[in-house]
Image 1: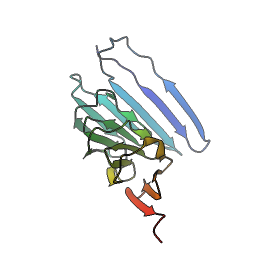
Image 2: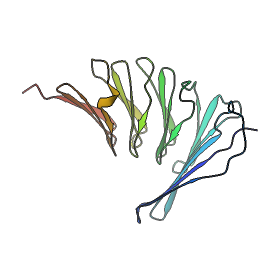
Image 3: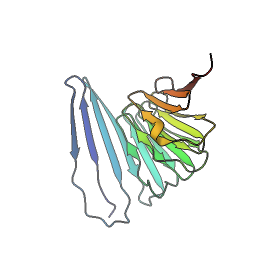
Image 4: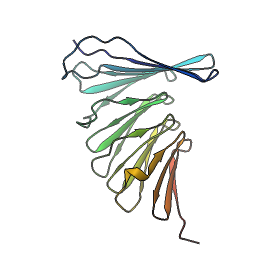
Length: 194
């Protein structure tokens, strides 16, 4: 029997109260994959739901968005160190051997981007996700449902990467790279240039 574990995260923005509940699980062996991840959100009186389920064979992920009212399938090889998706309130992300995958509650679709080598661990906030691979930084926007990348022309240092509410910030020397989750785009400035 596949391992059944669900995370229930309910946010009530009106009261700014956050409750996290772990639902009971069915006993399983260590080799069995996570079957589902559950992230309902409550905003005022409307309820939104993002649900990610793994197929019985473990080869596909199905994600459901209550905003689009549909399921979307992702067939992808997960990274061996990160076999499960990270499910946030408005999106889910998954790291592959040389790909990044993101599901957006708003669009109801998976988005995939090829990476410049093996991606690092994905760092997630409530409004963005980011990681690096080679000389590239990658960020996912739950507003656009897409990944964007920027080449920083040097090996990336994850200690210089900050993932905030709706932004990602990376500093390298005199250069600052910013990702706007709202716009879904990177922008950079070199403070040494007048």
